[in-house]
Amino acid sequence: MNLTNRLILSIIQLSPKGLVKPFAMRYIAGERLDDAVRLVRALNSKGLMATLDALGENVSTREESLAAIGACEQILHTINETHLNANLSIKLTQFGLKINEEFCYSNLKRLLEIASTYRNFVRIDMEDSSTTSLTFNLYKRLRTEGFENVGVVIQANMRRTEKDIRGLTPLKANVRLCKGAYIEPESLAFKDGDEIRRNYVKLLKTLLEAQCYVGIATHDDFLINSAYQFIRQMNLKKTDYEFQMLHGVKVRLRDKMVADGHRLRVYVPFGRHWYAYSIRRFKENPQIARYVLRALFVRE
Image (cartoon, rainbow, N blue to C red; front, side, top):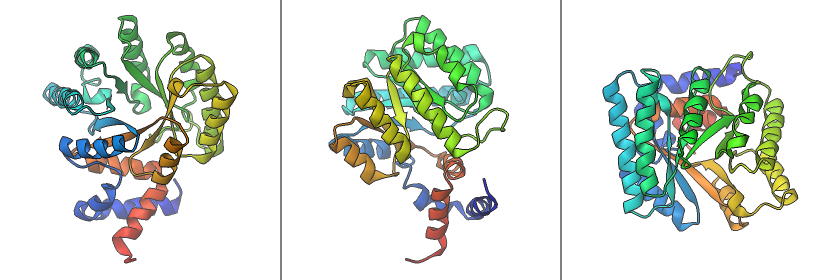
């Protein structure tokens, strides 16, 4: 992150949360599940799918983990009861991954069993590099035990990812491919934007050729156009893949993609931990941070 972007982020972090919140909420459904349900209904009415994420990660007690599991169970029940076209995204550190791996596994298995009764799907989000191997290990374990309603995320900025997908393609893994949101050392992650794009395109081609179902998660026009090219060349059906975007980002583009016949899923975060999530997103995308800063101090 350059000096200007670092300064902008510092100013936002020093601003009262009450000032930042109205602008952060452009990218977050709200603090309650009801807020998320209203948003997903609106998205569904436009032909868009959704994935719900109850914000929170890196819990430190079993009690917090069990509370997170309960909240995610309620999300699955609510999706079913309200007939939403939506699934669930979760973070393993919210389920106790750093407390005890077996405890986390039992929590996730319980959630997948509930999702299975509703014929729904759970996506395991990828977190920082300290959890990558543990995440893939748990995902593979669940798949070998017969769970088909679970997917994982891979990050194109990570140097290890090309090797990681060699262990995923034989499973015909359901994968969300993204650039990567966490700040990692150069020894572990590519830093140059063009290099990350090139790796993203290479990984996407590999996954599609292996007939993995890919959630193509990007707002980058170059990557979207590259995906379009692969879709045409491989003569893919629209049920073979989907595009994914964050709520509140490039709304016109996402609507056009749906109008053009592509399936698109909107990532809908919500919950009382909105501030920590927002700061991480601002770090990932300084343009959003610039917009928030301008909105805080400049009257249009």
